[in-house]
Length: 241
Image 1 (spheres, rainbow, N blue to C red):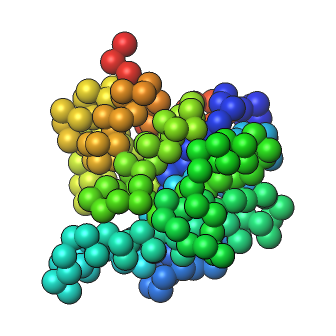
Image 2: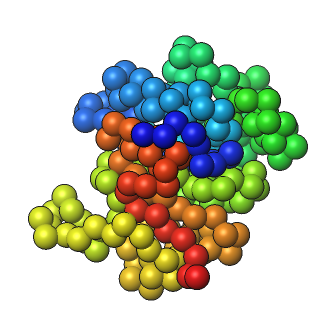
Image 3: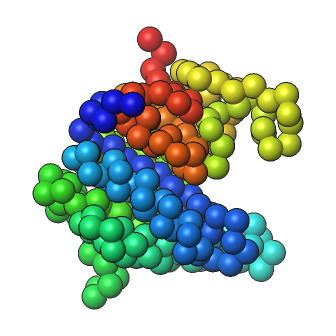
């Protein structure tokens, strides 16, 4: 496989659940190190990496409903969860020789830097993996939307959406053996058929800003490298032309 990257700068979106793997707890050591290894492979090619991680391994919206929480404080809890995950992943990456910087949309003085576009761009250019946490800083927005927003802001050439399946299917492949996988989709098809690539706001923002979305299996060996170096594997979502 070619080791020459096809992109200079990417935005990687991870779910919080990816940090737990098959472990019943919050964060699994092996899963965290596996993810960090895959990221380091791309980092060592000289690719500039922005990263957004969710918080679902710690707190999910469904839990908020069971507790009877209002949406706004529930989303605040989720933003805090993304910050915890970002700090954990940043430390694991640091142990592997990657320079990292965690930046939050919320103010956590003394723990993480507050998000600043100029500082983020400078850090990327200096070879730091910039981990964006705290969501957008506002309730009612998902971390998918955060990812598309940060991808647009840092002028990423692609949004890499890491999942537990090898792309986008017409229905859940975990439940339906006859599910069909798409190798390529347009934004319009993804939105019209409600294929759950990312939430609709995130997909629409990527379409508006001309940022393709590449969905791949994070736990498949070389899948992220193939996506970055060959633009292959998984499912690529691009413009209508």
